[in-house]
Image (tube, rainbow, N blue to C red; front, side):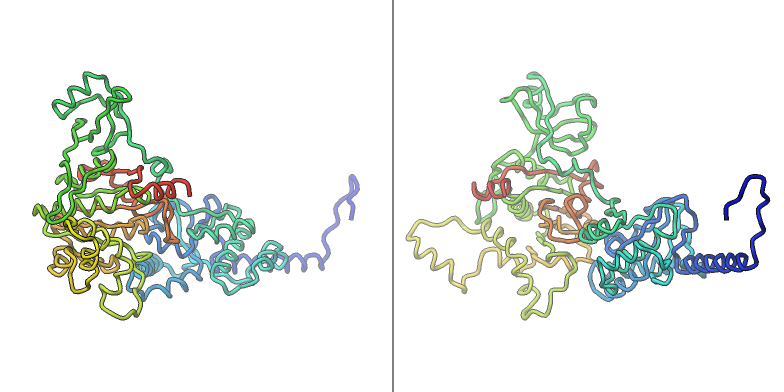
Length: 507
């Protein structure tokens, strides 16, 4: 009805009043149900973050890292956590820890879907996905179910819950997941999606492996060469952290490597001409990066060494050689070498044989390195007789006697939880496959007198839950850099072969 000027509006009819009451009652019931299922946030002034299962598994402490924002835990996430909680692995331990944290948070609240406060000033609440809470005219959810018709898939149920949250809240709703495929699916249907960024390092940390250069004049370089120490003002070494390796450069042909020690002093590298292995080979550093790595490995004041390097740069071989060198010099009671089995914590399966026989395929690169370093120099004589002796299974390899004595250990990383490791030279190969929590587990196992060496290539990631900026290797280096007992080296020159170097850089 059109209202004319100066005309008094007519009173609504009784039928209109009843219709209004019914629609208002229906809206009120809809809001009450949305609140009951956790769809309505306690406030509309901050963001709502929906956490995927892999985020909680990756960092059980993430519930305290979203500041004043609202955290939403879909009920389907609990179903996935329940599948993992019985595993005797890092994933199982993290699932159990998340369960305990959620139980503690919600123990003081009668309605866990309304939200309980967090230490950061926000809230955390459970969200229950139920299509009945969505208005019937929701074209957004209908389109989602047409695109992804499998409604029983947990990922799809979490995304559907996120869409419902978007409809019931004016504030932004963001899905947080480390699953790249789920991120693509979410963006395809209009859901704002983010990776979990708390433990990601700055891209510049892994962008370049070149050594830092500091310009000096010829007199300073000559003084450093004669005394082994050079003090330069802080302005000339900005962003150089304690124990970082640099290259002092007076001209293109006048350079010397140095390490930043305490009180801003640059000191000369202390390395032997070669790492000598009794009855084995003498390993000489082939480039500047390897010289810096050996200096850190042999420094008794440095108890953690992290090393980046692509395939063929010699990071594992140099680390094992330094470990043997230190062990035979009685600086450590033994050498332990380990590496993740695809991802730390995976069950080894019901394979026949002992633990050593099960682990042999995964740890074969370590056996190869030990065999190369401890193989006696080939004697003069017919090559055919030498090969026949090498292939004789009854003849033990030199390092196998050390394995039997327990002086050298090659073990599964999955069984490190709960151990305390004193006076050992501990090498962790392929450390880029670890999550930050797994790396923390390894670091905290080291007792007094031990040295931990983490080596790996951040560009070669097989673990689906980490990437080049969030894996345990780069996380450890980023969080502990600048400590007096920590050093880091990046190797950028391949020495395995011309073919391997070309493949690493061009393929």
